[in-house]
Structure formats: C-alpha cells, structure tokens
Length: 296
Image (cartoon, rainbow, N blue to C red; front, side):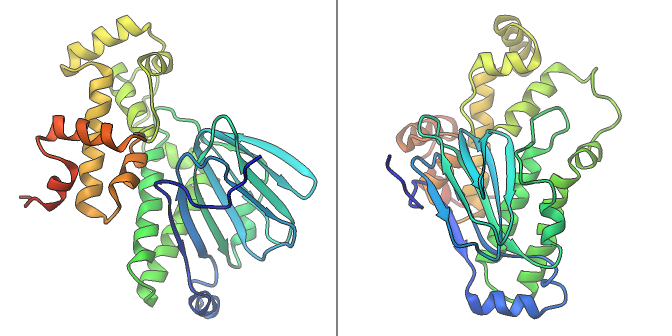
C-alpha cells in the first residue's frame, strides 16, 4: 500500500516556529490553549501518519468528506464524513485516509493547560451531522479565520486573537447542541422546505452533491423537490448549488491569497478546468481575471 505523510493537491498547512510556541507557553493567555500546527488536506489519497514515539501535542482531525481510520495505542477506529476525533498527547498513534474514499480533513495540533479538557471523550469518533441549525459552514469559516490570522504574522495580538477563536472553535464541538440552539428561533419542523435545502447546500459546500442526495435529505422525491425548488428560486437545485459555489469562490478570490486549485477543493470541484469554465460562464470572466478586476 502506498503511504504518504503529506503532499496533496490543494493542501494548506502552517507550522508555527518553535520560538513562537515557546513564547506562547509563557504567556498567561495563550498558555491556556494554543496551536502548534494547522492545515487542510482535500481528497488526501494515501495519507498516512504513524507516531510510535508519542508527541506532547493533541491532534484534532475533522473529516468533512470521505473516510479513514485511526489508532490510539491498541484501539482502532474508523471515521467517516461529518465526524471528528482528538488524539491524546503522550500516546502512540496512527491514522490514514481510506484507500477507496480518501478523506478531506481539517487538522490542528494543539497544547495548553485546557487541552485535556477539550479532548475529553473525543478519542472516539464524534458526529457533526448536517441539520437545519447545524452551522457547519460557520465553523469552517472560523477555521479559515484562525488560519489566516496566524498566516498574517506572529505578533502577540495575532496569536492571542487566533487562540481566543480556537477556544470558541473547540467549544462549538464540545457544546455542539448549545452552538446549534443559539441560532434557532425555536422553530424546526415547520421551517420552509426550500430554506432547509439551501441550508443543506451551504453546509456541504465542499462536497459533490447529487439531486438525489439533496432530495433524500429533505424527504421528497427528486422530481417533486426539483419542481418546488425551481418554482421558488427560478433555478434547478443543482444550478443553485453551483451558484453558491461560485459565490463562495468569489469571496475566497477577494479575501484570500489561496491558489486557484486550493479554491477548487474548498468548493468541492476537483477539476480546475471545469471550475474555470463554470466560473467564466456564471461571472463572464475567468477566476484570474476576476481576482485582478476592480471591485465596487
């Protein structure tokens, strides 16, 4: 079996310098909880990591698509889309992407006085399934803000802000129901079916969804759901999903320095040529032309 530790198309990763990590451990705020490494691996085929010698960091892995497995000591688990786990510090471990359905993951190495608290009970796979008030896209945007803040430099202000957000990020997972309820207006079952479908699309922006996938989530037949959706929005469900993807691509082109192939994976399109054609069709210009264009 081919095994790769890293090196994936569209990947993004950041390793904080040892000098910075040492400084964080002395700061009264960041010593409570701080990141040492952070990244994103899309469709990470052959991804494999084994540490027979334990490390002093906790390893958080959030699988948003595909599948994989991990081992803590002698205990092995499988993990699938919409699940996360935290590997404890000081224990040998291994993890790998599934051969037939490689995972897409967000990952963070972290330390700090509060790290064991957030890692409690997360050694087994924890579910984060999309639902009406799941706010998965909010959590993913929070990850991006943490990543971009650290990428912008290691000033005390940047570090403290990033790790304050990291507290919140882990809190959205440990207290997932409270996080979801905070966005609820108290109505769940009788929410508009089209709004529910659009919410589901936004929560799964990094995936390739079929009409059947969306209809199944709503509980309607594909034909009836498609008719209702087009009547309400003027677009077929899949066309609307693509519009959302291109809208997100425009945001990433405007607000980040991510490469085109990295943006492709962030909106669930692996083929950069198809992405460019779709973008040009909807926006009237290529992604590169859009990035260079004057806005406002």
